[in-house]
Length: 424
Image (tube, rainbow, N blue to C red; front, top):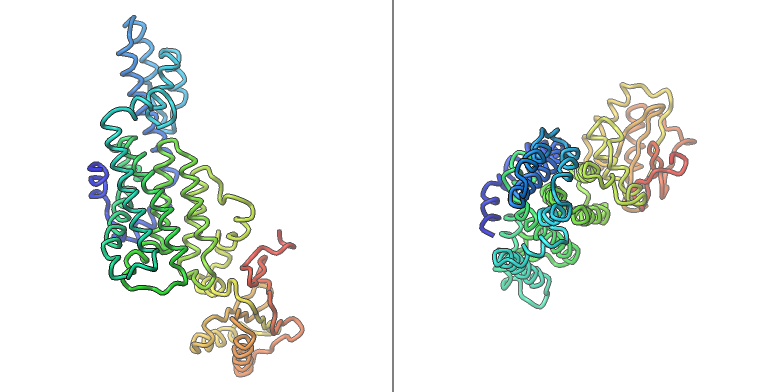
């Protein structure tokens, strides 16, 4: 635990230099993957060298065998080097040592777990998890007054920040080489358990009476860039110690969070960024862009930008999941100057902030409303805007009130933006 705390102090903090961290997280995936596997190979080779010296019966022959171990690495997980080592080292002994290094079942792992130091370390980690579990349980208990939960709030915030900072250090390719395998195993395991606790609290807390005393925890558990980074780092550390299933589990929690986020709570300036980061990092881990074709279908709209104009993209994102829409198709004779004037009027009227104006082969005004009355009200305002700017509406190709509307290759409805069958 002392080593974990030391790693925490090396972290830059959860919200320091947010823009720089975001840029780093989007670019470092491939470099991280190379680093974690190169680190794992180096640790294995070092242990195997020690094993050879300790078990040596014919020193001269062993020295020849070591040459294959200390050969140059290509920096991409030097499997050829490890293959040549097999001929110089007893296979069963090698398997045991690698098992101990990676935390997989084996005699070496069993011996390590039986050591007093390992037992004490495991006990400390388990005790921390149990205390955090109890604190989250108290926060969810409605029979306990919010004022009596302040100590639990403080503990949970401290644990989340500690693990967030620790994962920041241990997932950094430039710092990972200085961390041990067992430390990464402990941190990634505890972080995964806390991620599950965060998800459970977030799910239960949604729609309840928001007690201000729980605000600090609520902020750390929200669907934000910080939360996504925390989960992604935990998954990468799990991969670095050969625990792919654990990495997949962490990314699965994040995927479920993104899928279940209500459309009305999907921040148009951030949600798309979160989905893209999740998918790109997952793909870089070798887990695929999403866990299933159905998940891909429900997140596809967000996986890449459909228009170049970021303001228009956010307007379209806000329409996702609305129950009713209208589309005013404009006459083919509409000029660019008329469109510019209409957009200026739309920007000046707050009631029209969610109206999108776009077109490739023809211009349209599109809006997604919360009710029929909402759609009727906004549509009437837009008809006046068209009239005053001299724009003619093409009634034949317009949709004045409809539960679904097509925008490009996607169909917008209460189910969200899904690729239409014709475009699939």
